[in-house]
Length: 216
Length: 216
Image (cartoon, rainbow over all chains, first blue to last red; front, side, top):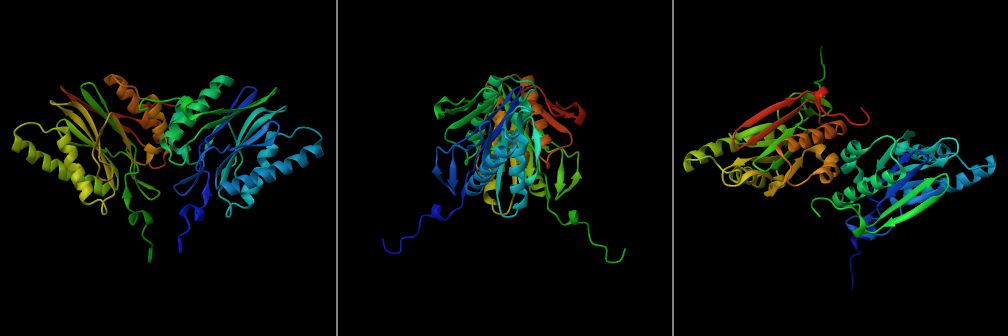
């Protein structure tokens, strides 16, 4: 017990490793994430929900450094509350994304987190915004995190314009499952959030309910 | 002209960046590669054929350092010629893969190349071997090179056992195209080699004949 070295994972930065994805459909969005948080080679949380609400109908997906990502999300959650009280109505998705982008850009040297912002508002319907490294761009879908590299080919091949809500959910679940199989920093369960005009639905898909592929 | 600095691509290591793939079908194999060779940010050869013959019905696909990969291929080509003269018949694919693996393993600290070996022999039909970092493993298909990361999800989702030769060729072309779109170090044209009992067919697919996806 004397002079026992501190476990390595206590001094490793806690990263969310991660695979995150968001996709818009006509009338809403679907966000998805895995649930693994790693510190070096240890998994420090195997059930973390990386889909964080910024407002009733606006969510963000966290990746990169866990501390940085959570802090940005909490700050923007607060700023968006204030903003929506000031304007007297629900905020636009673009506003939320701009707030995230402002923080990511101003502190781009110090932070290492990438948030995907997605939601529904009355003016623009379902929207997905990428805010990587301080840019702001609206996209039909966005993927992020370490696991995303492995599924670029899959999403490029499989994405179709005009998919329905159920097709988008299936697309997200398939993508997460493929990435979780290949990326050591992604795994656990899959969290899904579906947002449209009428409701915001959170769902968990456990490991053995995820789609399997030829080698499983 | 006095004191003009040497262009920096002259001092950068020449890597084949690359996407390579090989897949077996009942009775043969299909190999595919892109054609880009980069030195830093310069493309020094945009039409290099990375599918190198080791014997009549055994090919290898080169990735990593261009010099290392070509040298390994040439050495094994020579060793295989000698070996096939000694045994008096065509060599097995496993023998070729073993020769590649022996070099990759012995010099693993000095070399940085990864060769995928694939071909047809009378004893076991079509076979694909991966030799990454000095291992030797037979697989239904193998992908390699910097572009392969982006298509792991795609090949995991799309691969089926028992595909025909034409299905395999289409699978290879789709995979190469997706990887070439996402990886900065892969591009140019696609080279295909199909090997079966009766013939070894080399093919080139030019840029505008490659499959396109939703954003093109």
